[in-house]
Length: 332
Ligand code: NAD
Ligand code: LMR
Image (cartoon, rainbow, N blue to C red):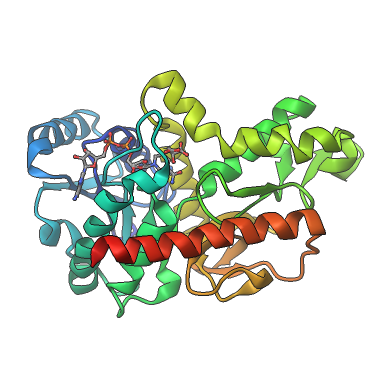
């Protein structure tokens, strides 16, 4: 029997991530090749004409899985009945700006959209916040939508996770699909900690630790980390626009693994509401290694954290606590 369509909201759908993301969703990249979808696209009135253009292109692409398109500037209409909400709408960082600079513009958007989702989304709607500062926007959304379970509100650090996989694959000249179990800890910002201490590569003679294969701790503890931390800024410098196709692809990876599950023996990185695991600050959205099953994520427990890593986990945690305070001061 054919599956019922899943309603997927994309906010900021007329923007550049939106333009890359909606065709991926309509092709089944996010929810599977047999899962029909209805796209709900929200943007603001100045972008209404462009949004309508995106809708026209979706019709013209004749995607077999796409069972309907709602394109609107009304948050209530956009949020009504959605099962998955990908929150991309907001102001992107421009060259020379830190994420904190975009904070005041974006947190107030997330406060108001929290209410629209809380009142109108389908029960158990899964929320992924992409717009920066992603962790803190997600936290604000959670705080102002108290009836949505905290476990349903997440932010995107999968792009950073994928960037780390990409760097290791390039360094070792191996297939990216053979590298797994890197971890992004903390904030989607330049304080994030890309950790390879538990990462492995599948080789013809079995699974090997990344550290054993790279044999260059100076690179792993130095340039590798800064490259991943600074990749967003490097893309902005090169494109004069922030990353879009890789962000859209990572958003699909995040939701797909959350809904359909992570492969056995593999974890991914997700920004989730912290319970204080690994002595990360509780009550912020912090990126952890997680596995997913039956539509639920679980933080991977028991990984050894060495002294070098401990400092980095703490540093990014402090930044998130500060961002939380700053966000509240922007809202008051
Ligand atoms: P963009 O400016 O091209 O698009 C943003 C869209 O959001 C625009 O169409 C704008 O009109 C719309 N918008 C603004 N306010 C809105 C509101 N209140 N409701 C609905 N829509 C609204 O930006 P982009 O390049 O698509 O990036 C979007 C966001 O994603 C930025 O905040 C960017 O920094 C962030 N980002 C995050 C990651 C990540 O890994 N977490 C990666 C890349 C970009
Ligand atoms: C990215 O990581 O590419 C985005 O978050 C853009 C940015 O501001 O760094």
